Length: 306
Image (cartoon, rainbow, N blue to C red; front, side, top):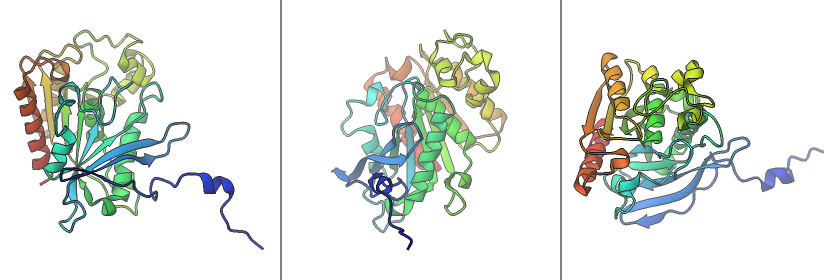
């Protein structure tokens, strides 16, 4: 007689993220927040999680809402998924609550850091998050066919790569609708690992860029090109909004200028805004300047998903 009952290891293993129950939502004004939602189980790694900020209209009979996929910074080796950067940390309500209150869902995602895995691991993780969000989209009330990826610093680099290399339906599988990207908002993101810019030396094996790809980028040109948004530009790229401080001492403003130029050459839609007086993380700007950058970024996101 066959015994089809699950084994003890199967019983004690947590449910797969594709079918695991969602955690209860907390209320934040008119926004529902789900924190620490597992989206992927990666071999020999911690479970990857995301936080979800859902507008009141999500799944409430008004049709699915667009999505912002947020990617945090931290030089690819640190950072928190719920941190939009130095100048937004004290906002009340916070930036993600503001985006959700404007009618867009937000998924703030974990990704493997450079001390855990080398590139393309973090990009693979973002693709896995999009896949999971597509699989669970009906119960979440979101439309991943209207997704804007938004990242700052190292997260801006990964956001650019995701927007430029996104494979649509292939990520989710043949039985799941494709999750096409509608646009990308990139705040002061690196775009080129192979070229000296500012004080960056691509031959230095101790830089965050070298830790990301596993060697000094200049010594592994194919790997550096694969990890460089400027090398991935193509005519079918989605609309980009690139915002960069002209006084950035950590990631030269020429990164965004070079990516904007390459996108324009390819005929892809791009808006470049270089901000006078702004260092990395909008350091040096008055609060009104940071608010203006956020407002324009949100307006761009809303426009491209309409």
